[in-house]
Amino acid sequence: MTPNACDGCGRPVTVAGGVANLWTFGENDGSDGSAITLELQDGTEHLLCHPCLDVVPDNPTADDIARLERIDHENSRVAPASRSSSKHP
Image (tube, rainbow, N blue to C red):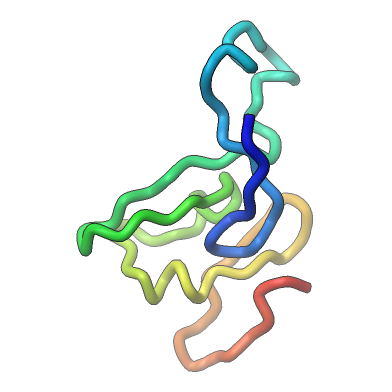
């Protein structure tokens, strides 16, 4: 697995794949701290952690991704459009 950072909140994540996690189950299934790449309708791709994926709206835009922020270890949110915030508390 390759270490990276979430494009939304900056949370450290790993990209699952290959034989490194082929036979993992239960608590060690790779879902903690892992991420997937989300391709938007505009053709851009964004690596997002699961807390960020949980809160992006249906049919997100690049602006929605830019407004993602980390609340705590397990939660993220999409900040209001008019709010300028620090992405990494």
